[in-house]
Length: 179
Image (tube, rainbow, N blue to C red; front, side, top):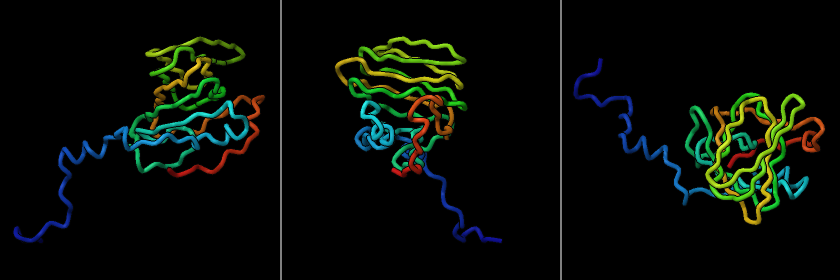
């Protein structure tokens, strides 16, 4: 038994300030990651886009990023989509995905499910929540880059898949990278 004057073997609980500071991702400490989906852009430059991670690593294939807030229930990142570029149709079987357009005047979103196809256009401050099990993709048809928030509704999403007929479905993804 420890005497009252003996030092404790357990570390003190962090202060509220320390706990909150460990969960802040400041913009000036972020970097655009043009390599997260580089295997797509290597196949065709029209797939060039960048991710900036804030909470968790998302589903791009980046295995870990010590510079982001650990995800508990969702991931949160921003994506830069240059003019004329696209994110190909892809499927998240396990999770809802939310896109919120911060900047961009003509972002086309495409959806496909059970042989049915739908597309719509979004602009600044528009949001779409795509349920799990629906293919989704987007194209920036504007003349300036688009910027959007992307959230996935789980801490570690499964790697998305592409339609079997899409050329990217035949490409072997690189091993997950660590940022």
